[in-house]
Image 1 (cartoon, one colour):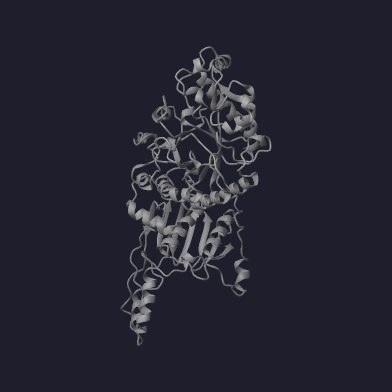
Image 2 (image 1 turned 90 degrees about the horizontal axis):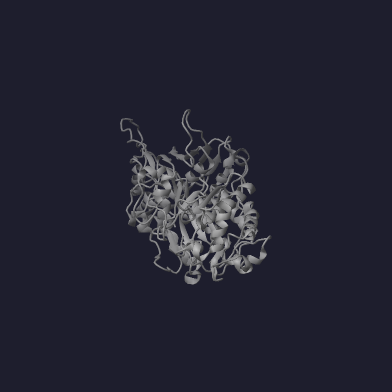
Length: 579
């Protein structure tokens, strides 16, 4: 990841509004219906409906002719057969609509498979309900949220009718394994049914329907079968050097959810700032920071949106904010010169303060993942670490044997921090940056630790193939494509969505060259990363605008790494339409 990090200002936002539920369908059937507020994007006449409305102004006779062959709720896809002209009647024949074969919904990311059909498709009506199957009660949050977004009623149980959307859990067929986050969306008889093996899959089905309605006003007839290529898909955010408001972070979460992204990495400790309230060590916390209550709201919203928040207390480097309050723990070379951001890993007190923080935040971030950092420890950036830091070299030999060196001491440091996290919250999956994994040595990094591969530009960096050959799992944060570094320091340039969309895939871990496809199963996904090296270079709003298209391109390639069907200009136009 990019370094040389700095700080900046922020203000907390407001809590996510509570979602409302409605009475049962039976009770509601006997009550007068109150007008509902519907989202603006569902009010606009679109496509052929708009054409019918325009023709109506020209005269009733023309309107009748148009309606006979062009129904007002027709879509760009779907649709039954021709009218039966054999039936005779003394009155004028009742026309039957003629529907073309449907085309796939236009969404970001695009759906993997759409089985077309003929029919009117689906568009919400005033009586639309979001119904959660009575045996799928765990989908209540998903159902209430979607009903709120559509301005529709939410119902638990009940018989679906035209205009309704039904959500249900559905186990895979006998003998088949469930595919996490997959879903099937069926549009038929002016209804939609979304099923999946887990809550996340059904939720992603609602995102597809939401985008189809927002972008085209209608969900095409047919069946969508969809699933992600990669299990880890997300955004990494450096709030240590530039504090972001709670409201801004929550807005990003909502956009991420619509893009089917499922991870938010929070890098909240660095040389220029420590940005989350600490009861155990308040002396290290920056003036502009998130309270623990702020973080709880962020994590709660993320959880509802099927996004895991991944915290990172980076060590043994990037601890400048901690060391400013504890200068006795700062690493010094043989001449007594302090090393920026580096903690003295030979000092037992250094481990104790970092472990205090890990234990304090373990319950605040209850998700599966935790990031240990491990990158850019400056004791290893000099030509001869053992000569420059004889104290570290001696500590390595004392702890790990006569052949051990400072790299072993750094590896052991991360192993010790991992043990603390596992004791505080069993079952964690731990991560570290690729420059925290060293070749050879007397001490090996925990085998289960995931490699977050960000760069090959540092001296002696191990190639991704070397780590993959050790059966390690990698997550892609390639700084060539996925690094949005404020101020563009060093050689960084703001990434473009076009370049990601046309060139990058999860196999492109380092530079521009992909690794062999045989390693695809070990590459678990990726995250687009925002680093705040020059925090004043952009405002929150500018950052949001700058990452909008790159994040959408990343979401597309993480969901489906194949060459997209749309060219870049069409993709960009769709992104602009969807907002």
